Image (cartoon, rainbow, N blue to C red):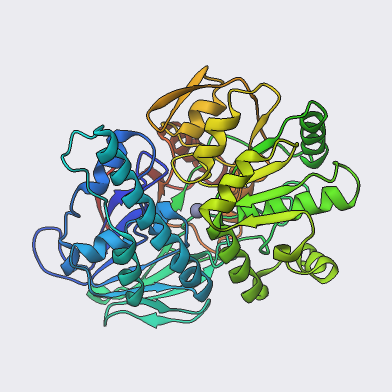
Length: 476
Ligand SMILES: [Zn+2]
């Protein structure tokens, strides 16, 4: 009997890794494909799992299907290759382009962390090693193979798949898998992360067009549940955003925005441009401190087939964000350090989005102690991350091994999420043409997954299970 084994994003929101094997769990060797291959982030208990081998040796996995280019879905790929994987990694062309910048950057950060701990002798491991290096991440890119949205790709005599739109970030897709073993075709749907519905007010500033593919047919669904127990505020966040920025500038402070370099940063930059041009906020200098954000803007411009109409219109009117007056995209470390010297009010957008690493650490170490500043969160903060600590109004946070007092104002706007919330998920699920035999919820904290499970049972009458870490379930 074919089976699925949940190797990550089960009981947590990171480390997405789901193994499909057409073989028998009791022995017979089958075709093995991994859906997503993400990095565990957040609490140490989960991050430690980045160092464990997969239960099936990496060299015995035949292929990877990658839903999108977020690190918690793709960030373990270089490690998988390092462990001996030599198959193909299927992804859409924008996802491949984005991985081309994200994975080497991740390798670079891993090396920097190891170097830092060795210098400070703060690691129990002597010497501390990177999970993978910049070079190893670059070497992993050779295994990527493009698959277009809607194209059917045969992986083996028993397995084929096609990508359908997930509308989560640029290039993001769900994977529809067809399994033809034991003479009985079955359709499996792996949602990856699911984007917002098409509603300007509830999903503002969308860079890519929104709305996941409707009318799915599936026997078994593996579905995300990040926002299973929370609803996004429905009011337009722009007036509140304008108020926060204007007040901070008025007291001589700066706004520091931790944001993923990809998608969220572009989205926020477009919103700032709109607020500046409409006179709703002062004409402050805007710094995008992320070499990745620059490359990501270039990738966005290349894949304009995914733009929303609003974004298309803004680019027609103002050109590429890289050329906008008053917007600085810092590439080199020197340019980044110069932002520290800026004493005038400004807006600084930097990554990582959950403050787990990257240049945002320098900006926060410098600006958190000053009550004139504002730290503004526009994205999900996983428990255990520094972003979660700061957002929870803690009095201090550990950065570079030292405790930094949090005296700056801290605010969060939840409307910018790229994940559908429960009413939107139900709206999407109601478009299915059949009722799947079983739906497994992944990619959620335990409370979020169990709340969504209850909702789906009550509202749709579906059979829903919450996937457990390392659990094997038969596909029947
Ligand atoms: Zn994602």
